[in-house]
Length: 335
Image 1 (spheres, one colour):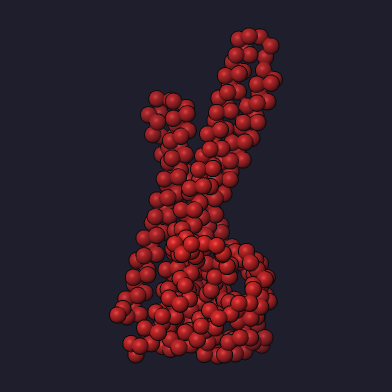
Image 2: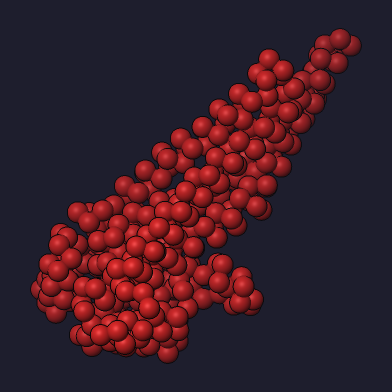
């Protein structure tokens, strides 16, 4: 049976493997789009390799820049999305006391603490790094759980901060959004180019030679727009689902890591076991059903229906609660 430290190391290796695949996916998408453009231009002078290479580099640079800006503003984005308000210690002394004790053990700075009015029990951590971190709990969670259970949940969230899961999760969300956005941009740009080509053909010269030239240019614009449109849909249909599978895979690994790391902080698996059992048996609907950053919550706030078990496993942001509880019980049995 694996020890806590072995599970932590195993999950970290798996996570960084998936992150590598993420970078490779973006590079492949950029290269393929560039290759299509190169084949369309038929310019042998470029050897048909410079265009896809430059496009690939452009995609990687664009993804890095976009991820950076999302990463810098992730706390404000998520707290606004969750309608959370920042707490002071006088608002909830017990909550602050629990978090203070946990960060002392974890040896990280005290995060900002937020509360949301969501009746569904849940919690999440976010931020750029441990120095700029925040933890949020829902009103439903605060009212439902006793101190031991709350400590288990918060230890899970503090572990996300300590392990830099908040950084990894923010980057994977940003990369997935970038891939989806690039597909949308190509689709819209392709449509506009095709419209432009049509208008260009209508307003060409009256002379036969100029008219032929105008039609040739218009046809080129239309074809270029069509290629962009098809490329955009290729990204949306193929690239986005693959990116989401990678993103959710990272999320599941980080959740498993945070469970065992949280136990490492409290030295008491029972609190988190009891908390997860309560979450499993709770059916209170969330008032934020399309929550951004759903992968950051301790329990997935968005319920999907009608999926096969195989698809559920690929597209869920969290491991099943039964599996998480069973793993923690095995850890408890080791003591």
